[in-house]
Length: 132
Image (cartoon, rainbow, N blue to C red; front, top):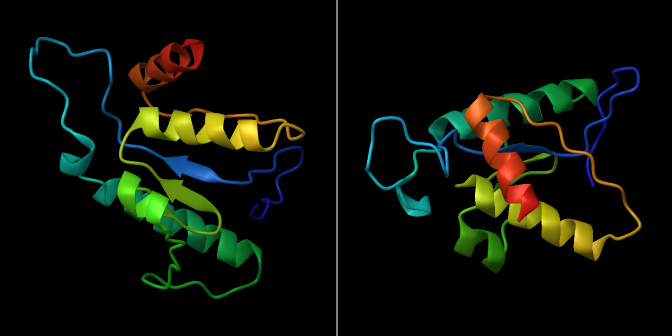
């Protein structure tokens, strides 16, 4: 399902990028969170580009900006997911968690380990969504 970085003891199969918009926590705001189609994913797409270039360098390829090959299908177009060989961009955290759950259901013999980095709100949202 992708390549592994050569870091002793750590191997990443896929990097998933989501916007850092809390599903649950809004400080001093009664505004509703933006819908998935309204979310600006430019930062996540930039991170995906950097990640794919790093993986390309690890594999000995000369990766350049703009050379990303997106794996598109009807389901990814519908959900707004941008998928590459080694990474994915999701328009929201719940969609990413759903993808992880679906992948785990389809690959019951595979153990999934997830590393969450970012804000404490993001980590809290992941914990809350996983408990559902």
